[in-house]
Image (cartoon, rainbow, N blue to C red; front, side):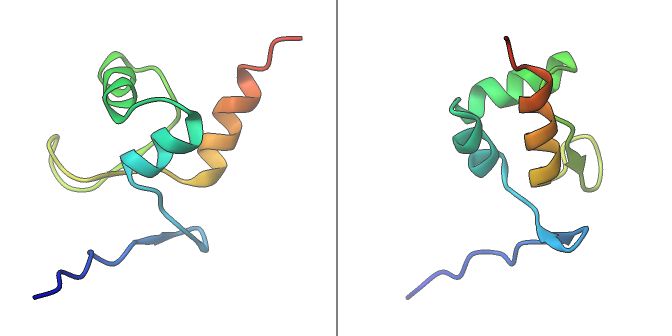
Length: 72
């Protein structure tokens, strides 16, 4: 029996990234990303539902976070 993944939400005309996908793009673990969220650090995110609800990221927010952390 095959299991179909849940459809990805579309936000601002692009697919939202799961925490795992966002962490992979940032080159960190999903646990580090979760820790950053808990501390109010890291890229902006969207939480669906109550405090324990689903978390997704927009690519634009990942890109903006990376741009803010460029060291010259």
